[in-house]
Length: 365
Ligand code: M6R
Image: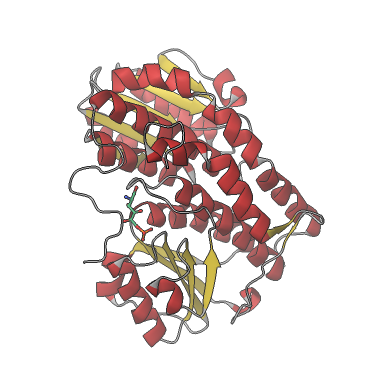
């Protein structure tokens, strides 16, 4: 049932304040404002040598954000790869490593094959899934649920923000166990997570502005998305969503790589979407943005009020989202890139929920 929405994708985008809250209530003790992992862990975070993440598509991008979190807040080394590459590379794996497989459906063929490889190599095997009865869940030593309810639209939206919410909680748990995070830091981070549903509702309020921008985006042939740090995977997610449902060619790039190639593409016809809420790196990303502006590129900047203050000339549009801590900012920044892709596809008149050539669950390699 789509409720009042035209598409399941819109319904699922709009459900996110609620689904994020639901995920959080599983991972967080709201009374003590501490993370409380309910699953019995067959390993100890403190003893892990490495975390190896494999996944596909949007689930891979959730893992790519989580790499920043686990490395920064738990000082746990992380390797991440798309499952279709990982499985055939057969990489050597360290003793006492944890392998994590992220999959909404729990049935993705390449992710399952990567899991079987890791299990055969004696790794601890954990799954982060939406479907608890799935094959990936069944074959794992521990299953972390994302609890966002069934996702019908082929383009993954609420599953991503639920995956990120669960991963953020797990990174805090790891940070505590490894002696990196103090109780005070943990409480600050948990409070930031608890504030997300409200911030996401506010970010959904950018929809009218985004519809106007999407009208123009629907005329583009190519779109470039830029981000730095944990915003880099969000830039890639923006590009993936746009390609998937509007069939417009898009690329997500690390902002710092711009001058190593893609800047040659910049002209007035190619919109450049910069995902840069204020954080430690925002100045660097904004200076990359000025390089685009100086070449006549049309910039659409996703940022918060602090980020917008420092923006100079040449920005066509600023999409303002609430200011949140840099820890949870990637979760919030997902909202405008979802809305941009959705409304662009609606203008193009594509089959948003069932885009051509794609299946919800990719059970063949
Ligand atoms: O069910 P999974 O999470 O394993 O699916 C992985 C990808 O196929 C999936 O995220 C795909 O990239 C989405 N259509 C993206 O919107």
